[in-house]
Image 1 (cartoon, rainbow, N blue to C red):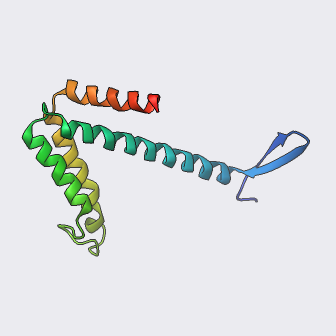
Image 2 (image 1 turned 135 degrees about the vertical axis):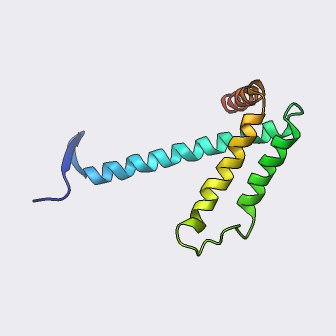
Image 3 (image 1 turned 60 degrees about the vertical axis):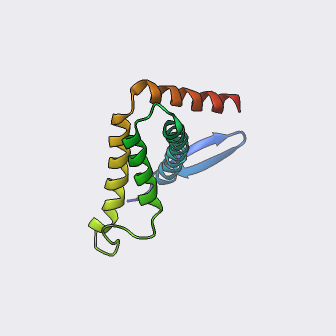
Length: 123
């Protein structure tokens, strides 16, 4: 039995066979590109939120700590410790960002998101 199913697409005069696993990997790549664009968008929003005078000082400190922790050459829990060493980056940074966002007035974050979306549409 064949492990890879083959689907035949007709393109003009020539047929092209593509495996299902190839389609899945293309889909995964497209999702990864989409997530990367979304991350870029969110970073721009956080930059505007950080600069906004209505953002509480503690929220700015937490956002700064998240950026600093991501850029530090060392971790609180070293990466060579299996599983936990790698998970600390995935837990600490998002936790700091989420706590900071909870402290910031919702209208400030929404206004910053609109400004970033407007800048993307204008570009």
